[in-house]
Image: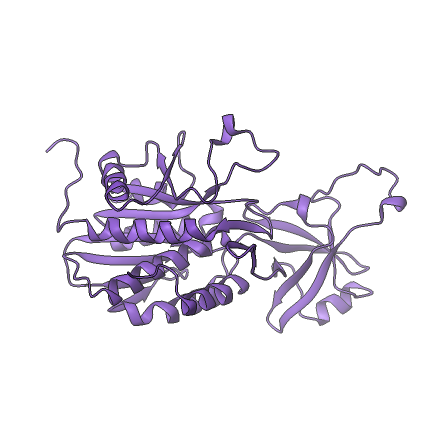
Length: 359
């Protein structure tokens, strides 16, 4: 039986997660991903903003997309004080509450500059209950003034990422920053690998898409959808494992890590494609969970669904804990089952599969 995760692919996952690829600056991560997927595809192309697409059976008229997004949340250097402290601005949904005492990398033309989000000791703060905000968190790179900071290569607009590495807890829990959503890029790459290793002949073109700039409004998916003009899109992203403290299941849904990938219901999800994926999961005995979205899924599914006069699209999500922190966590079994579900759903598609409601 084919393995969804191999020893070699797990090594790639660690390297891929440890590499920084913030929104708008995804190129280093995209290069890693492309090198990993090259043996499993027939050709590839990129666009002007850095989305990467590996193509299997590129001459086929009918086009199927499997997609994830490559970018991670981060910060921008926004203002440097005369005495060398740096105020920041969000690049995506960065959480100011987790910033104090975190180590960071400031990405400059001269290379990485190390810094920390400083925070005064509790017994020096006048208001001991004061919470972090963009008004009071600052970066300290050990410089005595603005001139020293700038000499290091730091300037307004430099991007800043947290300095945290991948690890495994209790043998099967993946932990790290940027599981949202480089774990998705990892999973679709493994689908391509499994198709190659199983010598599966697809009757359509498969476009394995790692899109940029999802964290600031699905921008990469919007651009690449217009270029590919797919007939079907299966998107994978992360969702919330709601089995932790401080989460209201009545608001966020009842989802738990280790119990399978999550299938979303919502206006952007084409119901006949969703039924196809559910049927595939049941036939393949792959466990799954269900989630109801409201107006939008908040993922690249929305961008594909409403592009090109409408593209049948569906979302297969991986439940993670502690989203948008440096310790995002998922269960290895869910990763394996998400890979298997995408793989089997693609294999079960027919040439020119028609998902229309009215024919």
